[in-house]
Image (cartoon, rainbow, N blue to C red):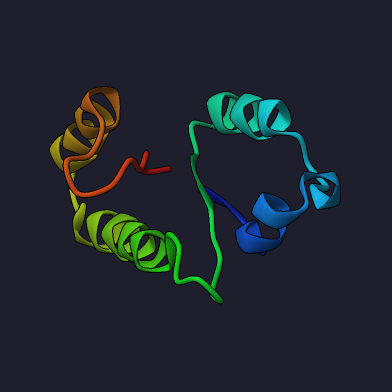
Length: 89
């Protein structure tokens, strides 16, 4: 699971435009073990990182075929990803 916030460039320019508090994002990310990104397509902020994380999670789950593979995914989550700060669900 990944939580992605968009329009980060607008929030930097005018903080009152923020719709979801940072604390709420962090709480939800912790609750669900999710990675989280604030992105801006206009400024190309965290867009590549978000898609790298999506691809990494997808590839890891699609290639896990046995219980030992899934155990490796669990260990990976506990150690955090070197590729992105993702947790695989």
